[in-house]
Length: 605
Image (cartoon, rainbow, N blue to C red; front, side):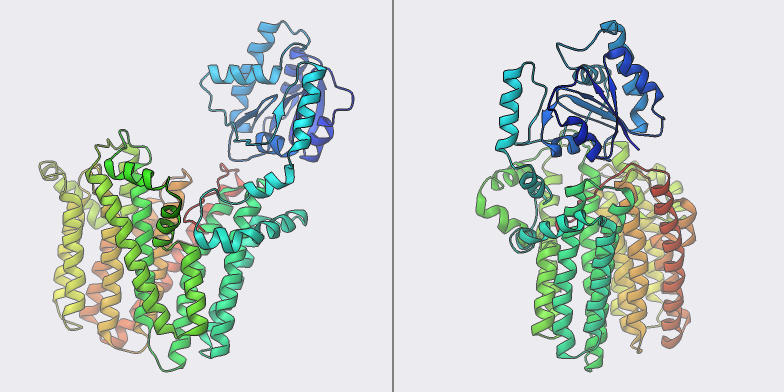
């Protein structure tokens, strides 16, 4: 149980002690700095501890934000400071300094908690100070100030502020106006019944899988039910994040589940639509796989660009300045958010078209919309990259190398090409990645199944992939390398499965791409959680992007169409088992050992 040390003389009528207990703290009273230091030393090192001024006046949610958010090792609001186990030593040092300076006298004229916070700042500690907005958090110095603070507390509805803050500050149009106005109340209902965000996330997944099952029936009633259930799943998807913000229940495992389940829900629904269309005699598996490839590549563009630039210095450009200026014009904000077709708008479109039209029309609309939004966002990011002089860090280059997912073939080739690569122009990496990827995809799509050209192109792709990563990815457009690799691998699988022209080849390809895409998403979430990339043994076991592409092209040359379908199925199952087992093991272990809590907002919901 976390411990709160209440310092100074208790104030008659104060509710601070009961408020701390309601937040789950075991409360101890301390008369001064020396007593506080003694009590602090008695608190077990593995527990959160807080120092709170007994004269504190404020909203309960201000205390909750300041003292219970699991994402920050150190946090403070006026009159209160807290430390998690990872920052315990920093708090202890600051406390010892204040005790020595104050001589252990009773705290009567100022706040010990605020002095400890100032000492932490002086030591260079990263103390999180939450945005309180209209919430009150103060340590009044006299009865008049205390009365004014109490009046200020009474004037603001703590619960209304808490409900409002449960909703993302920046979200899509559909979510903002059609989901969040009521989903926040569902989140509060869940919180009052002790439900966790992870439970709501799981409920959202189950609802989406049932929706996919309804779509797979191929009946009009099934399609209508699927559309309704998909919207219900999205409501729950919004609710889990709002519940996390409402009750500050953040965790590394929760962020991973939320992000991973979003992809699982959407891609399972694509498969359900394809199955339902097949029951009606319409084969749309190529469209379903194309939609998954396009959506995954869109996300890789987002991830790569953000990782390349989030800590870059001199990170400005005329394009970015124009974008910021447009954000100040009301109507353009919503228009630009809708253009990128975020998950809310995308799922609403899919749900409505499923209920009213056919799976083929649904996929056509999805492909056109996602292609347009991908072109818009990628073009803007390319312009930003070309018009600014950003210096990228080693961390950014390492993140891009991890996102590239290079296997042993590319790694070995990169070592041999390292010296030559340093003498090439700065645009070499994305250029050769694009050319090599385009070569293997074109060979797979434009030649007959079983011919040698895809294999020749795959060998060229291995060489260009090695050259692309032969030097650190710090160039202006080097963030395009991972998306080019993803598109090359996925589209090669799609093209070869389509050319096989045998029943079941495209569903098998869908499963293989889904398994590999999961691995790539898992890599992103590990990097975002500061956990590093997946272990090298995993990348080597599944071959890296260039190794898998080469193997698939070899299989297409050596096997008949039917045998190729079976090989794709076996590969899909093998890759899925390896990456899922390792991923689940990693995230569950990270959760058990108390990995830093995060809440990845990810794609606008």
